[in-house]
Amino acid sequence: MQNTFDIFIIGGGINGVGIAADAAGRGLSVGLCEQADLASATSSASSKLIHGGLRYLELYEFGLVRKALKEREILLHNAAHLISPLEFVLPYEPHLRPRWLIRLGLFIYDHLITKRSLPSSKQIDLSRDPRGQALLAQFKQGFSYFDCHTNDARLVILNALSAKEHGATIMSRMRCVSAAREKGLWIIELQNVLTQEKKHYTAKVLVNACGPWLAQVAMQTIKAHHSFRIKLIKGSHILLPKLYAGDYAYILQNADKRVVFVMPFEQDYTLIGTTDVPYAGGLNDVKCSDEEMRYLCDTVNQYFKQSISPKDIIHSYAGVRCLQADREVKASEMTRDYKFELTEDDTLLTVVSGKLTTYRRLAEEAVNSLSRAFPNLKPAWTEQNVLPGGEFAGHDFKKFYLGFMERYSWLPARLAYRYAQSYGTRAEVFLAEAKSLEDLGLHFGFGLYESEVKYLLQNEWARTVDDILWRRTKLGLVFDEKGILALTNWLS
Image (cartoon, rainbow, N blue to C red):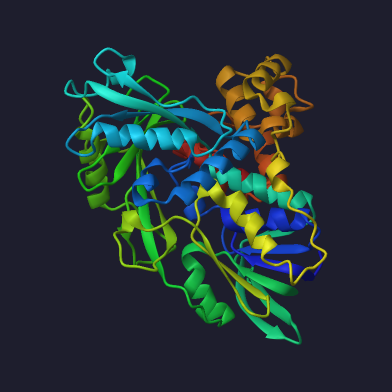
């Protein structure tokens, strides 16, 4: 492993790995460290959406929405196995937003970009349409529009794989202890959080992409001053058994001007979120509060026939976003657009904020900003680049899946779909020699076989039970104690 890099990135969330992939593909030598597992914090605690952000139109953030809509189209093309269209139903509430305003907002949303592959918005009669059956009888009119959903943690992994395959060195569970300038280079000290072993690296440029840890790393690790103001905002989600039968989502308006998404999740569940709460607590154990659980349940109960309460929640999660705080506004009105701060000598780049949807554009612009430091930088490339696993004809997942089912007809349908959607063509790495379920090795339960686990350990930086059950897969939702014990023993 090399010890000298052109660019070294601190932070293994979506922004960090996105920058690593972009820079590596443009001819730079790249190192990246992450103190925990890749995508172990904010980047696995999102609403799982690739979307323009319809509600940001009310905040006049047309530039952000246009940028996000363009990126939605690019990502839908480049990761067709992992990113899927999803219809959203907006029940009409006349006392919250007038009909003309909603129609205008949806018209703008449809036409902010010229090339789009998703259907246009439309008005629907909820009193007759199946999409209104789960709602209270008072909701007779509504609107429908399309965005996309994804597996956020796996999107991080795909970008880390892309970075690695273009020569980047990705180091998880390596904490940056210090970084200091010496003789024109950054001297970077890392410590393995498992073994406590320390290693040293050098780099021409350092990137702080630490999300909510940004200020802490800047002040304590790099000891670099920054001019921007930031604010930490917590967003929480709850998961319940499936509330309705359709494969569409709902966007619910609240009296506080926030919106709450209600979405199908992993076939058997309904995902509800998110909140926007200023946060000042510890960053290593962020949880959904009782108050947030009640808020989300109360919002759903204003719309759905089936009443829910916190006791119905089977799982919850929360993440902290680092947002720009250039002006005093409510948490829900703070911009989600990103910002860079590059030192005058082009040696330290700090990345603030961003959305899951716009990570690719953020990464491209971040590397573009380093053109003075690297005058021989190759052109931007990721817009046309298919992410690992998406290398199938026509970017047509349905067609790929039918062929996948035919090739591996011995796989149960549900398992085949999970493999195809999670790994795309990369599933063939651990399926290539198999002719039956028995060929996949030890079965830990619930469709997790030894061959997949080995693939995750060897190729996707997985190390622990949580890495496998919660971030590489979502099988933590169904695994029992017996299965967890068997997996734990096997790993050890």
